[in-house]
Image (cartoon, one colour):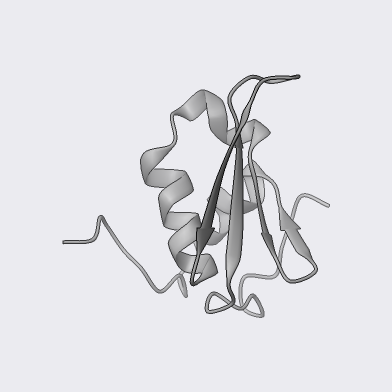
Length: 85
């Protein structure tokens, strides 16, 4: 599945980000966030471009790949915009 219904996604749910350092068997960087919105913002604004396709976010029973993360970040109802102050 490479598409997600952005209108029904719960941006407030706790989330975990797994960022792969290499495409195949490299170390994984793990981050836990209070909300999926924060995890999405971190993935888009802090990960280098080459890491995003191999990274994913898990929230509840939902697993978001890099394309889905970008889709949610660009959605009109995404609750966070820009870097935090």
